[in-house]
Length: 537
Ligand code: PEP
Ligand code: MG
Image (cartoon, rainbow, N blue to C red; front, side):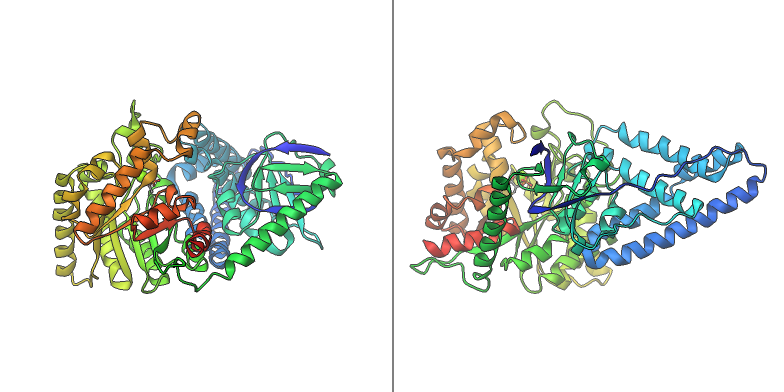
């Protein structure tokens, strides 16, 4: 048995035989051409076919992975329309070479540009350039796409998978994915997660045909890949998978049940989501609402800002899917560990204490106004509330209220329908907790962000691995701030929830119930586990 340790990019356990997925190799010849116009025409035809294929792929993936993830194929289409990319290809042809060679060279150049980028997310986009270049080359050379031909479900071993290769895979035939390259943020990884396929990126594996047909275990929890596992490891993996299944079915029985303790105390359990796609998981987990919709994802994966229209559709989609259940949308919380290329932010010495979240939004109100317009327009389609991150002062709230009024007036003038949107803030700085009595008079609800509250109270960087043990036990200072916030909120008759990771810590559920916290918002996977804990108390 050989064990490789990689990074888990999608959870789950799989046992099965290896299928080595290799791209069809094709040589790209460098050929001098005289008929430049004819070659440019070939390119235009290939571009048209590629765009039609991507439109089909978008439609196909709408069902399998949902609208937000399907968007990658729309982005591929836009990349095929990118002036820089097209100019590089055309220059290659005009300088006297065949279309294949020009596409290949332009693809290489642009891939390198992405690979040199500082931002991890943007670096991962190199595979998208490779994906569209490969598509164009296949079309120009008349080669069909690589298919997985197998009768039984298999574990795919590949160097790297592009988004279109991942989404094209027949889910019933794929038990797990193991690649030697790829990032946790790559679209292939994101798609694997939304398709519920365990996946591991293992740089140590040199994917060769030698693995073909070998039995392996893929542990999408630990990131381990066991080649030709011994009997004991197989039994352990089977047991782990059985436990996973038993846990899932025992939790399933809690669906539709109340979040109520044995002595009748109730608490709301909501879900945290970071994409439209996750709404399904929240509904599946029977969450009472969305307690935190991290809207950053709309801004992270791109170099331009999302438009009002794009945001509106996304928020409307979530609100409609949740029907009359509450959806709390948190406005842009960018900065610190979340870098958005579109903001072109300069490096800072202390980014967690710097230009982030509401500070950016109040400094560049046009960003917040666009987002608020989208949120308020979407509010006509469901039960939407809006929440602002990183608040430290009453002045920020006054400014926010002015902007909200401005947006509402403008929308009503434009004859848009606007719902009744509750306005809340996150209590995630010690300053906000300490002045929560005053803040509570100004807003409709609080949501305590314990991730940042811990970071700022204890002066420990939440990104620093060496500091993680500080997060393991709850410091009384943090508990005091939470308790103070709850008391102050209730004094003013407003609701208070907890949406940081601490909400999912079942050793604290009783403490939070005793404090009279109104709502706990956790990742969809934790909702039913928390319900089980509440019902056991
Ligand atoms: C928090 O800080 O607890 C929180 C929920 O916000 P985020 O983790 O997105 O900063
Ligand atoms: Mg936070």
